[in-house]
Length: 381
Image (cartoon, rainbow, N blue to C red; front, side, top):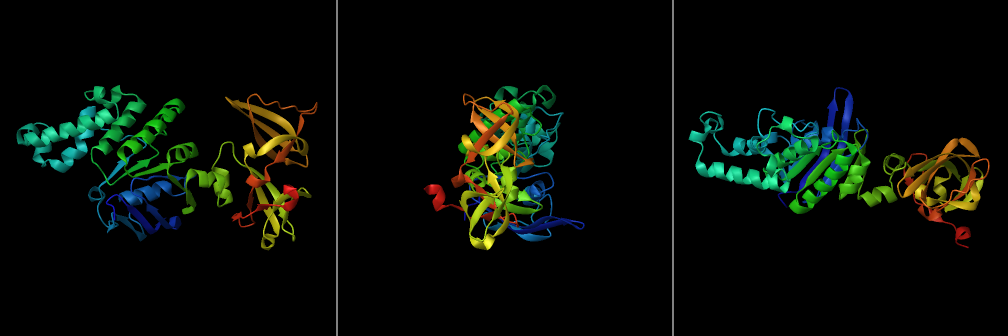
């Protein structure tokens, strides 16, 4: 088994009467970028802390490279953690901050002392540490900042220092707890690209916690979407977007949010919306109330179809999002995506008609789990 493999098996954790993790099972592949994503309070940061050894689970095991490390101290797990707050030492230079984990591991207590350390430290050990620091700094493009202190750095530069400090350890895995959340939107987008590129260069295992689905979708090999201490779905970004396993996943993944409408599955399996047959069929065992999910790009303007009264449009560069109340039930709102050059062509009352792409519709039962649906023969005709 690879030294960089990580197995999370049956992990449970409670704080008092509150179960924050409920039998979590995940196998993280060597070199994988896995994101833990979900709303605040879903348990993702607690799970990361359990992996790091900062929290002890009530049950279950953590294995790294096939070795059970559940009861091993965090310092002995060969994991590097990058925090939201950067956690840099303000009195140290960038060089000293990056070197800290290596000095803690490779030098004796006396050699770490600021006044006598240089006299006690083996010259070859100091050279090795300096070489590792420079290599990490060059990888993160901060070699020109090595003699500055954190107060003299921007937020993005501080984050690179925190990453370099983790990088010098050559860990079995990098654990990252919302490391970009303190940055402005433009810098976050830039740092997403840098993190993804760093992952590709290193081929290292990344476990990344975020509440931002865009971060998870753009960087991850796989995503574990968590809710109320459980994993709702584990899969690739395409799988979570294109085949959400539950309503929770469908609601969370995607911008704009998925359109959800109440439908009825008849005894013949035909799905009906506001009393009208849709070109969608479901197994008859699911007969009864259900929820239809439609992505904004799966609705198109048509000469006839579901009538909407437009109340707002939003420009998003090459896309335009159109929001309208459903005339059949004004409590229901639909959003469709148009290209910037596509004409809206609403009538004098702001009414348009839309048709749905039945082949890309999502159907969820009363238990909020995904139902396998298919196009009807009538639709194909």
